[in-house]
Length: 358
Image (cartoon, rainbow, N blue to C red; front, side):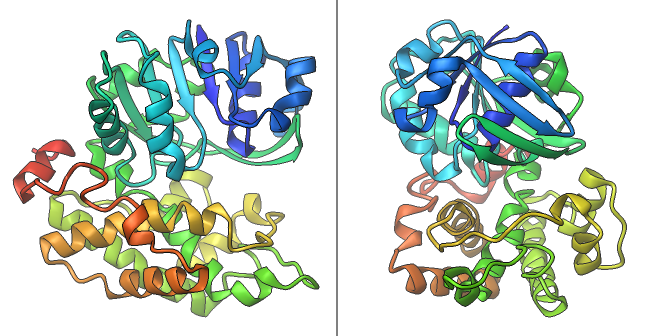
């Protein structure tokens, strides 16, 4: 299969390398040439961890047209706050018979992507799918190297334009088994646990994150019992909005148990029993996707839908306010508000229909 991986960060290198060592013809695209200059030269990605092998990809390029000209499958691995601009870049070159999978979509990823293609008057709109999360727990160690700590189980997938089962069946066999079909897009968009695990701990540890003298393990040191308890309250707001739409979704604790096979009586125990999280360091700046992606592409749409449907999300609102003040950024304006994802016109029944809730 001709596969194009969009983005050469942690997830992009992991996915491109994993597919290549399993015989897929992989093109890797990245906006910045400096990021992939070594891979352009060698066409090799070194993988360590649970997979330990050098992968030879077909090509690496900064030309979006060259990257997707023959692509059967386009795997987007960039942070979700880049999806809107990527849809604009891709729109002139997309083929009707290709599939675009956002890894992950975060909240309303596929809806925003399709809405952008329509706004750009894209001549064809392919099948667009979103994953609940990326299947890899991984960290990029060098410009051409990635350490894969684990592969998650049963990552939920939902799509627009095809059945979820059909999209999973279309995927290369080496990654098929890591995905499960979602009942609807509520399970992927509001099943976005990144907004729970990333935003509040980053905000509450902002002093340590910005300290030039200290580093710490993000999950093991940064999520204390009190912070984990607060995350459970935020999680209740997330599940409450999903329930109001008409779909019961799993808690973050249960997601950790299902995806990683961990055990625990509460979120704190589940996080600290997850050995894949043990060596993950905290970011060194608030200009990091835990804030710049997960606030505008997670908490902002959660608040927007909650407000529209009359569900109180006071903690979500507080975190958006603090993050906006800390970074001097209006996340509600730039993020996935109802206007930006094309849902400002939608009634409650329209929203349910768009998300596949019967």
